[in-house]
Image (cartoon, rainbow over all chains, first blue to last red; front, side):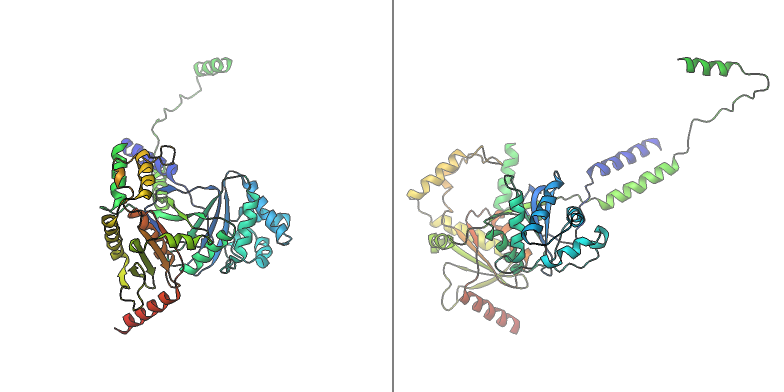
Length: 205
Length: 218
């Protein structure tokens, strides 16, 4: 039995090492597939998430430096006159994403983290000129001045195009024109030009 | 050291009343540990998502210089793809004719062949001129500093053939985000260098409505 147990524990070790728990999210998003192979950055990035019903959530990814997240909410609280307390701002740092209008932000952050999950968030108000999302992005970008920020857009398969367009409008209004859309990897279909190019690249290596 | 010697001593100096220590078996029952091990394996297998998310780059133009860009597109090389509801794709080449006779319907499966065909047509019709030299030169040299590096193209003379090909993507109100990403992905798959995502024109909306109504009537 010993070799068998050895192998089993080897597999166990592998899975422990390979597992990376995904952060909790207020909504479940089924992202589309794409052939892009670029890896997802997990730090110094702003992420806008929208679900199938068009609710929009905003989150700051700052794994390496949680202080940045605190600075962002402080900046927003000041510029939008929200009057968030110290505890509420600390709560924001812990919460994965927020999707409420500015008017409801104080209330949402007054709940402890466990209860926030149960709150049905209505989404950040949007319009064709960016809505409140514009201010979120503006203040977050202002906080990260001097750093290379990435702008992630994560949308649900079933979300309608106008939502996506309004999210882009909010970015565009901030003079941001380069985005990273979060997708799942799929292989380039056999026989297409991209497939042939990738084959060539492999041979070259 | 001292402690060890002391321990050794006490072992040797066994009085007559001291019982001999019972020899314990060194083998231990591993079954519960193995059980637990397998339980954990099962847990990790179920929770692990092997495919990690990737990101797809998207560059949007500034709204102001959109007109210029569109004017530069040659009519012969233009293909407009419109995304309707229920995953239906409409397309037309060049300009939309007033009677909408070049307005066609297809699906996401069929659009790839249309893009490939269009690309081939454009390449065949291409005639070299002054503007080609820059593109050819760029392809000949490659770009080793870019990430990932671009290799020098051995067939650099052909690099400018698809110069005039421009694909215009117009998702309508009913198109889903998946449709949008799929069609952008199609640009990567077919290596389309010039494409733009813009809003629908008024007459295009009308044609889509009419087509949808006709399809619904059947």
